[in-house]
Length: 138
Picture: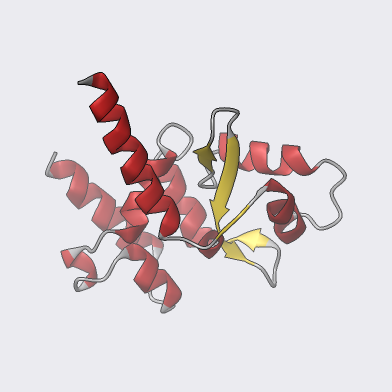
């Protein structure tokens, strides 16, 4: 039974991971801190702060980072993404947070938060409303 549950969890994680364009820690450092000396610390600090979804893969683990989180021109995490990720406790449940970004919400007219972000329509107020509504239903 436990092996079956782990297999289901692995499949769910793979489906989430496959839903995003992702980069590794090296590419993340190039995006967020192109002049930084320590590549791994850039990613680790952002994950630990709850700013950034880092999806652990393999047993080591290595982390992969969904690209939608970044404003690549300004070398930063989108403010609304940082806000949502902190509210979603990405440091303790990165796959749950990633799933939230993909899940359609009635409060967003059936769009996912990711779709509204990509359309330039996602606000911190909308994030708060969707998260609060989901938590009330739990």
